[in-house]
Image (cartoon, rainbow over all chains, first blue to last red; front, top):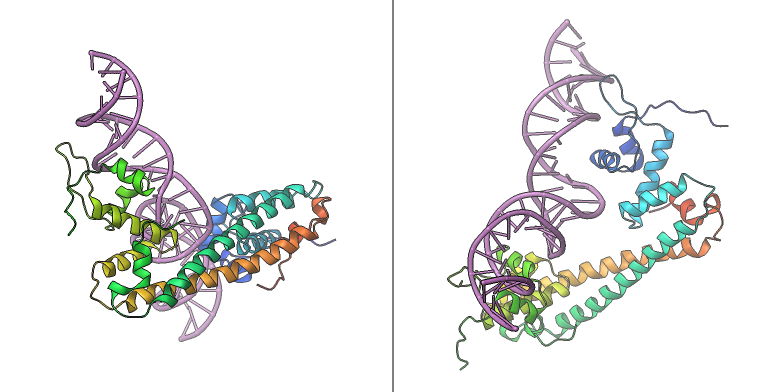
Length: 141
Length: 141
DNA sequence: GCTTGATCCTCTAGTGACTAGAGGATGTAG
DNA sequence: CTACATCCTCTAGTCACTAGAGGATCAAGC
C-alpha cells in the first residue's frame, strides 16, 4: 500500500528526526542494531523510513532502560510478527523485576542517607553523623 | 591510649576481613583512596588497623552509592575532625537528591513497563503490547 | 569559480568502578 | 620436596556511549 521510499535521509537528518546523536547512530550500526545503510558515491550514509522507525524503536527501548542485548532480541521479535510474544514479555518482565529490585535498594539507601543528614547537627566533623556512620564498621548491610 | 599495631595483615586477610576483593583493594590504592602500605622483603603489601578501618569506611560509602570522588572528599574530612562538617553534609545531601531523582525516574519506567506486560495478551508478536509500545514513535517522553 | 562553514567519514581513546586473565615469584603445609 | 595457595605487575575487557583527531565533501553566497 505504501510506496517504498528511496533512501533520502542523511545521518544528520536522521539524528534530528529521532533525537539520537550522530555518533550514537554510527555506534548502533557497529553494534549490529541498525543495518548498514546504502552510501552515496562519497561514502555518506543514506537512510529510509524503515531505518527511521527502527531507530525510533531503539531510542524508546533505551529510554525504558533496556540494554542493547535486550533491544537486539526485541528488534528480532519485532521483525517476526508471526512468532509468539512470550519472549518479548519475558524480556520486559525480567527488566521490570530488575527495576523493581533497584528501586527497593535505592529506597533503602535513601532512608539511611536521609537519617544521616537529618541527624547531623552541623558542628565539627568529630561529631558529624555522616562521617560517624561511615566509620562504623559494625553496621548491618 | 591504644598501642600502635605493627602491619600484620596480608592483602588476602584484609580482603577477608572487609569483604573487599583483593584486586579491588589494589585498585583503591592506585586510585589514591588507600595509602601505599609498607611491603615485605618480597614486595607483599602489609596492612595495619588504620588501613582496615579506612577500607571499611570506603566499603560502607560504596554500599551507600557514593562515587570514588565523593569518597575521597569524605575521607579527607574524616582525616580532619576539627573542620566543620558542612562539606560532608553537602556531599551526603547531594547524593540523597540524586538517589531520590533516580528513584522517581525508575518508578516512571516501572509504571510503563508494568502496563506493557499486563496489557500483553500473550498471542502473536503482531498483537504484542510490548513490541507495539516500542514501535509507537509518537509516545510522550 | 572560489571560499567558508557545516556536515560527513574513520579511527582511537576516555568515562566509572571494577573484573578477568597472563605470566611469573613467593609462601606454606604435609 | 612437592603441591598449591597467595601474591606481584600489567594489560585488556565490561557498558553505552562521548570526545576528539585528522581529513574529505557538500551547499550557499559572492
